[in-house]
Amino acid sequence: MDRQQRVAAGRYLVTGGAGFIGSNFVRHIRRTFPEAQVTVLDKLTYAGNPANLAEFEGTPGYRFVRGDIADRDLVAEIVAGGFDWILNFAAETHVDRSIGDPGEFVITDVYGVHVLLEAVRAHGVGRFVQISTDEVYGEILGDPVDERAPLMPRNPYAASKAGGDRLAYAYHTTYDLPVVITRCANNYGPYQYPEKLISLFATNALDDERLPVYGSGKNRRDWIHVQDHVEALVALLLADGVDGEVFNIGAGNEKDVLAIAGHILAALEKPETLIAHVVDRPGHDRRYAVDFSKLTARTGWQPRMPFAEGILETVRWYQEHGPWWRPLKSGEFLEFYRRNYKFLDAAAEGGEGS
Ligand code: NAD
Ligand code: TYD
Image (cartoon, rainbow, N blue to C red; front, side):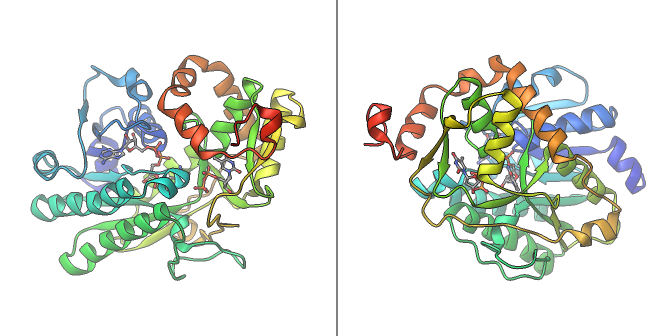
């Protein structure tokens, strides 16, 4: 099979496929390449949700395995089955949780990557894609950075991802594994666990709950629609001569938190009085900004979704999918929420900030 055929009809292992980006990737592959075979390996942490993949259960060429990427025996057994493509989305992903409890981040985002790479070293693969993040560069206050910029991660999530990122690279240089590393900007879109900025604010606004803005609300991110991210990954699978390389993925769509809140409130016709400033996140990176021209030059990929359209579509999706997200905003989530946010107007909020 040539590369194109292996993308269209090959065997995929998608770790973390029950999460936000992983499930959007699986959906894209299943719809675009019906002959492809997809195995999902996912631990189903609080962020992993079988409902994200329910439509594929029992369909030919699809298999779900519940398990941990840090489980050496299980991972070796699965990888030994033989894959054209392994994409590692599995990770602990929320910066705020990493500040409260970094241990799981080191285990999954560093050690788990090592376990996967060891299995690939033993059994081989067509290409291993390590889904890293633009957060490994740390905060960027000047021009957007390209792939040669130093890694200066500043929170336990970003530092753990930097460990996994460089470990994957080391397995390429040391053992010649066919590894590609991607560093994408902030994603938004359907099926995002409602703890990240856009999914949290959209679901809070729908319930007339306040939108907790850390500090000034001036912190900036580059926002990319998840579908654009997924298409960038497919473009990289199709590309020749990229093993051992790093690719930034972005959208050139920088916005600060208050602007995002404004878009969401406007889409739902909710008042700006729902915005509530809360005590800032420790070590809060002011800005991320990557130069993704290398990816465009090497694959022709470009982001397609205009933000104004993507955010409207996303807010509508959460509006129409209450049964998907409402059950998630209960139990452990509410405990995390109360622990994490210190509202500045505690008195007006019945002591939530105390
Ligand atoms: P997510 O939190 O929605 O999903 C993560 C998934 O990984 C969940 O299904 C979870 O159950 C699974 N998982 C966690 N630990 C595991 C383990 N030990 N073994 C197996 N499965 C495990 O995350 P996401 O937003 O979809 O992010 C996916 C990947 O993309 C991550 O590697 C993340 O670092 C990276 N990334 C995310 C963004 C973003 O904006 N969300 C941006 C750039 C990069
Ligand atoms: P987040 O979605 O957690 O992603 P990142 O990994 O980039 O931190 O946060 C995006 C931005 O939104 C970041 O500047 C922190 C800010 N933010 C808030 O102000 N309030 C919130 O409740 C959340 C979750 C994020």
